[in-house]
Length: 83
Image (cartoon, rainbow, N blue to C red; front, side, top):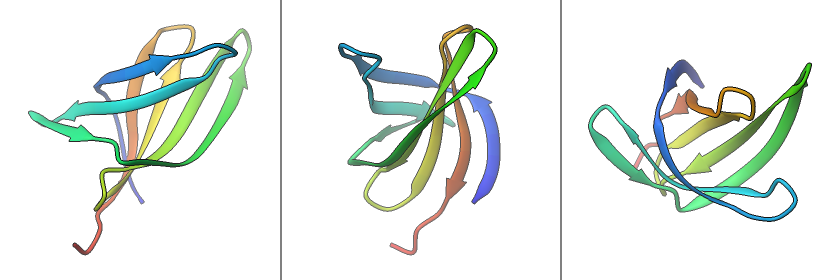
């Protein structure tokens, strides 16, 4: 995966019990609709929690991260598909 680490705008559904479901994100003036969340995990850094999501738009794989303290979404990595 190629490291990106850039802030992005994300549309997400926040549910009960820290459940977060990213639905779409904007990057480089393009809107990506998330077709599948392939993996999710979280990391603790002091008081803050970073929620990580491996997501696919049906072709490419992206890693998004949401920081609970700063409330900022980052596109952290990208793997381009062959389709």
